[in-house]
Length: 418
Image 1: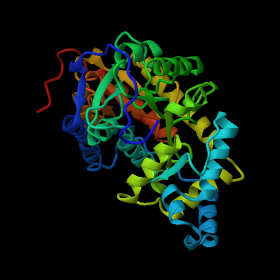
Image 2 (image 1 turned 180 degrees about the vertical axis):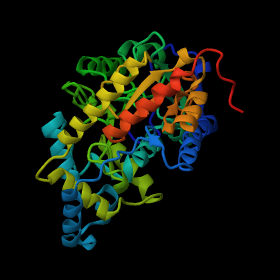
Image 3 (image 1 turned 30 degrees about the vertical axis):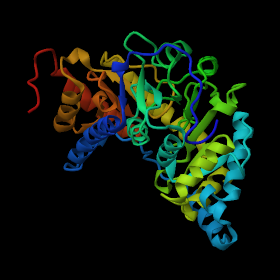
Image 4 (image 1 turned 135 degrees about the vertical axis):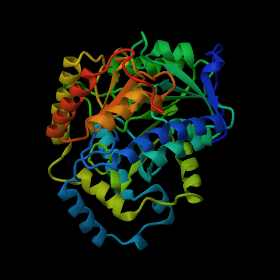
């Protein structure tokens, strides 16, 4: 897999072209969906009693030992001792620590000197990956629904989005059959596991199935595993790069924000073949430059801290998740299979009102912020995304408010919002 400019071999057949969106259209669509979420957040800031179950930034504090370790390492680290290549690729110590963790926890071997690059958060990593892999006109297959930054990144690279429908009578978990049915003439497959926004998590056998389909179609795969440490019910997680035969045609995107509650530090990373990493570095050199040294030392401290906070965070999120699942079941609100990540995906259609109206009214009348499915894809105008990112006591309060709110809803009971 080379960097920007190489075309992957394709199999014949493909999806209905009407389901695709390209270039500026993809960027605009992503911007509109993002604007809807930000409009709701702006409204939430105008009142004091809102319980936010909207945004995806962890509400937990970065553990003190990570912050303290970052400061100590920064004081002992001289930027003058890093080469220009290190400054763009990331600290050698951090890349080696990431490689060690991948090998130890995921069974993935990666050369820290040639196959890992540190990015300014996973968001930058996403855009860098698309710019390095996608040429204008290339078709990129993505699950639907999806986080709309993918639309913007693919559109910025001039690619054409091909949606792979999930839900609506099909499993929310991406499958090999769905990939074969909709991505046969694509160059790149985006595989987000666990999913944002649905919370669906593809198990080990399913990951192998998707990998086999991608191999059969000669697809390059961008595996977004930012939620890899947030898989519930004790189920194991299989990294896409650990599947036999997948390594040479795959790129891994991950980071520290979700697993370690380090959103503000902005540290992500990409793992892929050397030619891909070289393409990424070439783009970084003329755009964003290196990830700040303080942030990188914090990431290194997170990997070396004596007490790993991830199991504690996972247990806390599992308790919050149980509260949400029980409440939605009690309210007879259908939801998708919540297997991992920080969100659940729920169907509010029985109340006779669209998701956008539902979310604006819920915020206005009950002081609870959720995001409408419209902001993750046009098909999802009756669904809402609910995050686990509030203290358990606040989630219980939010569910109590929501019960009172939905008790007054029903088909034909609400006029459209003006």
